Image 1 (cartoon, one colour):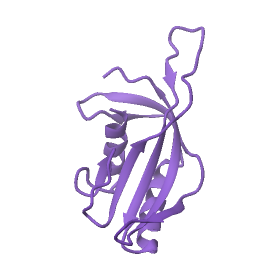
Image 2 (cartoon, rainbow, N blue to C red):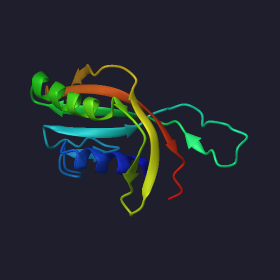
Image 3 (cartoon, helix red, strand yellow):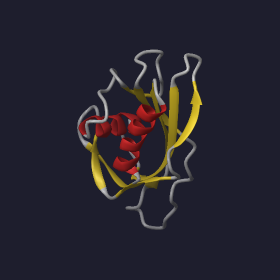
Length: 136
């Protein structure tokens, strides 16, 4: 659900094409250059006395992989610029409808995570999210 919404957002921003070079919950062996979004640990939901407040605080990790450090860093920078301080808005659900996101904020700057077994470069960044609880 949430990863689908975030994947659709990155696709709409021109950062990748879902299931081609933009993936949720996995980073396949091919293609060499791609972006993957993973669930992270996040923080506890907000507790409030008001019945109309139902907010969760997940975290996602994004990896950008490419053959060169410059290409991987550039793709990760595109994601970072898209989400580093995104304010309130609605993101489209894959099955239709929307979910209200209050904010998406980078937890830090993008960094070189590693090289994989094929010497491809992987950059990473974590994003903290504040959003309404998804019901479907």
